[in-house]
Amino acid sequence: MNSHFAASEAALGAARRVIPTGVTSAVRLATRPTPVVFERGAGPRLTDIDGHSYIDYVLGYGPLMLGHDPRDVIDAVKGSIESHLLLGGQHRLEARLGELVTTTVPSAEMACFSTTGSEAVAAALRIARAHTGRPLIAKFEGHYHGWLDGVAVNTPGTPAAAGTGEIEPLPSTGGVAVSDAVAVLRWNDEQALRRLVASRGGELAALILEPVPQTGLIEPLPGFLESATRLAKSVGAVVIFDEVVTGFRLALGGAQQRYRAEPDLTVLAKALGAGFPVSAVAGRVEIMDVVANGTVGHMGTFNGHPPSFAAACAAIEAYRAEGLYERLEELSSDLADGLTAAAVATGSTLKVRQLGPMIWTWFGHEDLDSYAAVQRADQGANQHFGARLLQRGIHIQPRGAWLLSAAHGATEVEESIEVASSVLAEMADAGVGVVERIA
Ligand SMILES: Cc1ncc(COP(=O)(O)O)c(C=O)c1O
Image (cartoon, rainbow, N blue to C red):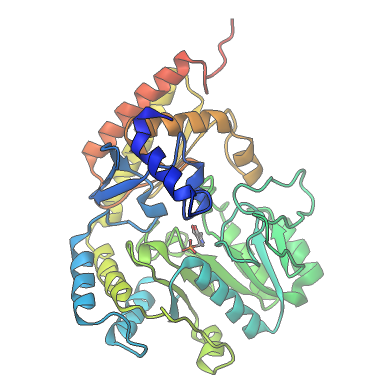
């Protein structure tokens, strides 16, 4: 037992007797040295049951853009639950949230709401298939679109395809039924998409993508989003941007605003609810028409969940605050610069990539321009870094993602750089993740 996390270890042991693995979402299992049991979140910080405090860059895996206790969101939720829980009917905040989404996300004209990102992806795929009358979905290797069958192939963590040829769809986990209704392409590979459009364009219902895949933060090459969109639309396929992570994060209007791209459908979740479960598929009227005319039934007991809608309305109002995104960009660029400087000073192979309030760190000599490169990075050094940061009070995602929120400030950034520098120096002493010295 690791004594630093004694209470967490004991609580996890108890949980494992009644919950397989002891955690409730598999990604959390990768936390080293151990998944932590938390009990309090405030501003940018978390406290665990051993009494340790952490600067939190996980932010609930994305939703907490406003930190752990955004007052306006909490007050809105309190007001909502004081007057009702579930209505099994309509309420005024539904149209209000629809209005907020369609006036915030550039390509959104109408929106259907669900609870989680995976559900909204499933709804988007169904809408695309109904609109086109076709079965095939194309996705990119290393992009994640939730845990449901259909797109749970070649996700972060599955082995990268070798070479540069065709990619065989690989399930992301046991129990996934892989069908020939999904094709997998390399990110930023326009030629592969051209070949697919030429050979199976008549079957193609949708091209789905993360405009910037969170794993590796590999930006689209200049012009790639435009040409991919053009190619897919040229055969009548629907272009779906999965902005579950990038929505309300890379800009108020998401990645599509940042890159001036024009998807047909957009999937939103995470930051949409600022900590409450609500998701959306939003898009052009012409495509959403399959829902309007009853061809696609959009269902869900918790769709329209009033407290989550109250949270989402308050959150979008908060995201509209003057200067929020500029301040976040500056703060996260300071953090990225500080981490890079610490790496140079300690002879570490740590590399840092930053885009808006998102950072990706990895160890190795190679730049990350593909999912295969992400997989080739030094995972051992990455785990060591994440584990030591956790022991020193910095909480990042196990694969190397850091997210900032409106609650983070210069104090957290300075403290994080200081701790990371000391961890990198320790790793250098131990010869982990360091530039090889030439004798
Ligand atoms: C890009 C992306 N799409 C979809 C999902 C699925 O969302 P959820 O976990 O809410 O089902 C996630 C979750 O991490 C995601 O990152």
